[in-house]
Image (cartoon, rainbow, N blue to C red; front, side, top):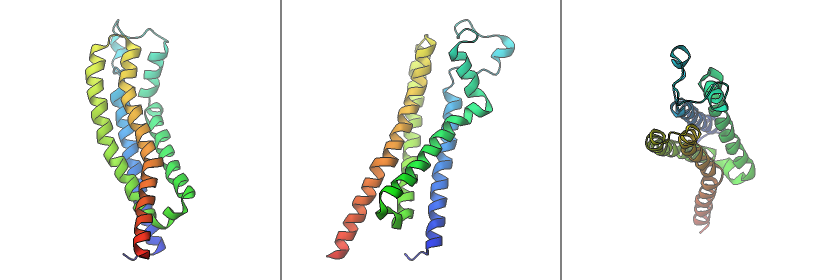
Length: 179
């Protein structure tokens, strides 16, 4: 398949932008779903007795994460880390620079595979543990731990596993072409 350098750059940009938009939307959704309780009506009707006291870190964190800035901050940080990993891998492995479209495609596939997996694990653990845990900090950690583990797993895939698999495929095709 013959592509000019501009076409390759455009395809790489589209694949990377799609991947990062998917990651951003997923983490924004999970932040909204992972809040242990809805704060919209508590200010009017009062907080239930089992919730944290006024000015506690738990309530302040929930207020921050439910605000417009706080709800997108974790997604922005994760997206910037993912873009940084893409750039760092391309700087570290010059062989991949000639195959940016393939690398961006693997990058996007890793994101597309890890998001439903992380969502399923987060949903199951949150539904199971948060309803059974009466201690608020434990319920909060049980809700956020699977999401954090899934995102960290995605970063490991993007920063280590995918580059090494791509390099292995490229080295294998390079060695086959020399025979």
